[in-house]
Image 1: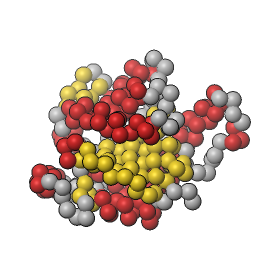
Image 2: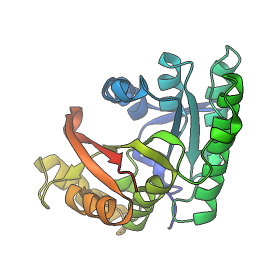
Image 3: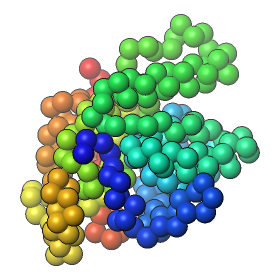
Length: 249
């Protein structure tokens, strides 16, 4: 499978569905600790892209604290787009800014072009609201201040993770940030025995899945996306957050 997620992805976590909304227990548990690490970046952001938005719970939570930020959710599993938009509708009625969810297969260059185009449109709207001359709006370089992706790399083929990093290099503005959250290895080694067992379980479910190595991600970021690894943050439940910045080119 070439996209961000697998139809069996929702089996990786307890979930329920009420009307249009899907609720993942795991997403509910980690949303606040992820937000806490993202706040210094979100404080300075105006346009944020999420890759692999899942049910929409994370972007709903992040937007609640940042009503002036425009969030763009995306998801490979088209069945989840309705749930994302259902969460967004609640906040948008109150004046928040979550764009309609876009389908994104990270390996599809046309999907990234669409994401970039929507970002440019959102940026144009922001400039117009501030009465800034539209001629000053960049049309070549990336426009997003932050790209967030959580718990995607280990439940998708490695080509998907690579494609997300490459895509980030295209759609992030110079100085923009990429935040990747999930379980990872360092120098090929697991940080806990439980993560090694988790990796075995993942590969048993799908041979193309598995816990990725930070150094391999960093190599793609540096060599193919003009992204520099700034920080590796220890997170609860034996996870990490990897923070990259877009280098001016």
